[in-house]
Length: 190
Image (tube, rainbow, N blue to C red; front, side, top):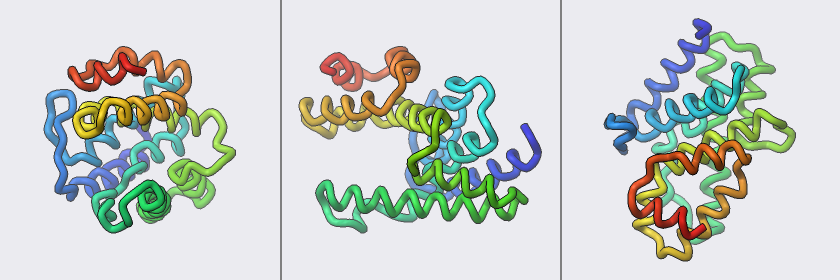
């Protein structure tokens, strides 16, 4: 890996290491956002033979310091959730931009990373790989808890919406994920 990407990853990981939320992923307990950032990069490499610097950096920064903007800071309900998500996308993009600037990346590349993180239109094939990776991370790390928290019909609806965003290749990879009993039951409903 190029030295400046490695440096950016290290800074992003250090920023996410402060996450008070921990998750168990593939037998390892780690700060949630740091673990999910690593997984996103792994999925990008599995989905794309030669991912660009921008795609790799966006994957690592997609939820950069997400714990700093808790969901509870916005009103309950769908409108509050969507407002929170929009704010998060801009927050993550801004945080990533500062790190990338310190690591010596050129402004055009930083802007491309930020557009991917903000999920702006026109991202082409890379935007789909980015979305696929994020969906696979969600399914791998959060589907079981979602299935436990939501009634089956609502959980199935969320899962259908997730699958609708994914490419056929990503859906095939999702079918191979080792899910817990609740997540598996939810997948079977869709």
